[in-house]
Length: 243
Image (tube, rainbow, N blue to C red; front, side, top):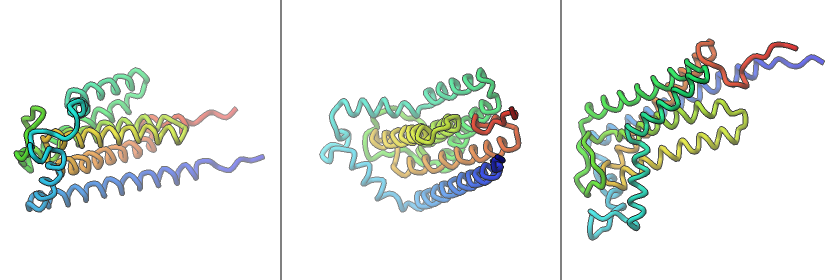
């Protein structure tokens, strides 16, 4: 019995995947542009101030809501988006991919994360927004505020690595689990920055948008390179010789 050709559904799926990632990147960039415009025009001040105050004792803005252990937990979570932690995670992933013979994937991760970090600094200096002075900062900060480097760096790193890991899993529920963990890590790091008083909420929203857009753009490039044979295919896409 002759089996139906399998290349057609795979081709359609690949084209659909590329289209979805491009649309996602475009949507994230559009959202970033809207937030940035409102920030430059000063239209987000009321929203930012209300949300920052919501995380503080109304009688003492130096006192965050919740028990002391919760503040400690948020400090720990925010460190997951620090340059040091993201660099360690990225280097570990890159060396693993190199040892596994996936040099093109390793190069993709290194370029995506380092490029995202460079873009973050360019945006920060371009917008030149000062840190919040409404509430006390619960951790040390020294750079500019918009967009949040922790939020953007987490989105770039964890979403890129999550997508890379998900593509190696043949089972859909495992793919969903991996991507969900990546998204949750990104969200928790961003929320922690507002809770600790070192970022305006719109800094974090913009960081999520810009980081997600960059990760999706890099992933679109990866899909294109994969189809042209310049990057390793997923296990399910590897061609097996006929028996």
